[in-house]
Image 1 (cartoon, rainbow, N blue to C red):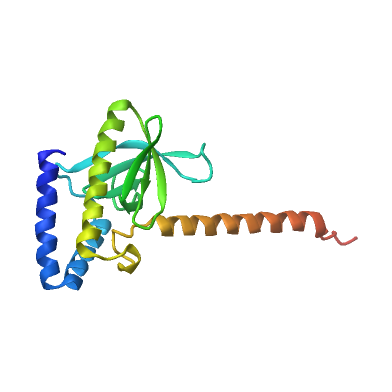
Image 2: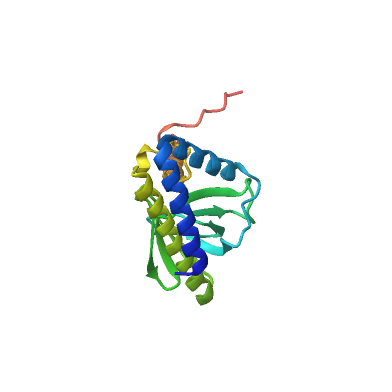
Amino acid sequence: MSSSFASLVKQRTQRVSTFIGSDTSTFLSNVSSQRATMLTSPSLSSGAETLEDWMYWQRDANNAHCWTKVYGVLDNEFLWLFKGNHSSRTMFLQIAVSSVEVSGQRQLRIVDPNGEDMEIWLMDDDSFVAWRQRLEEAAALTTQFFRMTEIEAHRLPRNSAYRGSLVNYRRNSKRTRYKAAIEWMATRWRQKFVQPARSPRR
């Protein structure tokens, strides 16, 4: 464990302990407010703890060949994915990292506090090593947060960054796919059973 990460953990522990000793609800409210501000900010913090790079993300969890190139930014325990260089306009997914494991060559499986998982694939071996280490540190910070607050993810406010947006993203994606399937079936039905209107005879 790096000295900077150990120092960060110590600072987080002291701050969380202080808030819990006074008012847990105030602490959770403050955390949620701070992270919500970061989510809507046009740019993310650019401190030494931030790791960012291009990578591939498995867009469809049920399709092992469905990968999309995205820009990933890891800031402490939070991972953001963007469809371009990071800005509020291109961000489409955010999670708190709960655990990470190797799932293939230069491939990592990341799980959020809701139990939802996602796969990323790094461009080269150096990036893989760096991201694996930093994601493991991120998971440790998330674990520390829930251990110190003694609260479950589903009890957090819906806009809490610790709940992330992966659940909603997949729910909306399923709804979109379902709607597209219904429209396709309706089109096929009309083509097969609905006779085109005949032109009136002159």
